[in-house]
Image (cartoon, rainbow, N blue to C red; front, side):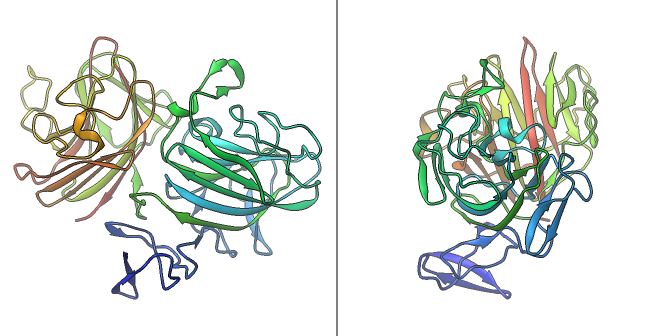
Length: 411
């Protein structure tokens, strides 16, 4: 059963009946409601509403299709919302010699083929399957067979991604059958290992412009995520590479810089604070720490007025990032709240040098945390009612990275 907000009214429907279905994540999600068992159009056939990226005019809508109007200038066109688990369908038309790709779970900065992963689109009709040929999980998993049509014709991808399990059909052929996102994968050369199980666990869906005239149509999705992302989230990581982030301030030793869309803290203790304060909110971000990793995300925080004490203890709550502390591990609220049941009750489900996604939702005194869609904490904490976000740096070689740190105010 699922609650649905339609026309201002709340209804309850049984999924699979075809009555009505819509994605929800505690906040009503503004999407086109589908009567076809939860499927929703990602492309409306008229304009690029819900999509972003590329140079102006590089991607256009023509005849109900998304077109690479200026091949070589579009980079990646991506959705404006992230998706973790889903079924996805789309048609693509490929010219002779064409090269493109379908990006899954990618981030807004960096190359989606490697921040998440790419299912290759390439004119390799009649060739043997390979790690870079059409249907491959690019530079990671070869398809079981070559199912791409001859060039100058339409093709159809169907993708199902749930957790670490991937299924892909190309033109009706099941070319990836329950493939695991495991230790396979590299960046450009096999010696530069980049395992799939270290990449982002949620992200954007993207279409690649690799310099060829592609066309896309009939793009639709069924969101299977345990916590679908609401619309309206704002990314707080902004600024030029190798510069301090915009909209944040720090008075401490840690050095914080933006690098290819990531916010990286290193070289000492201290905290980076948002200029904006929040009361009720939903926050989502991708996080990675190195083998010395120890960090935290504070909410309802304020800078400590005591310059001799670099820690804002007592000035907000710390949502912990630590894979090694047996008590205060990733997903817990430091020295305050811990999982009472579920997979997180016995310890962290994250590990060093691998991306994971954090979700924190605060409404009044109630706070909840999720790691990779798994609920960790659900507690009533009432001491601090509003304040800033603060990201914690640490010493002893600690490196902490954040991507797509997004916030939706619920005030």
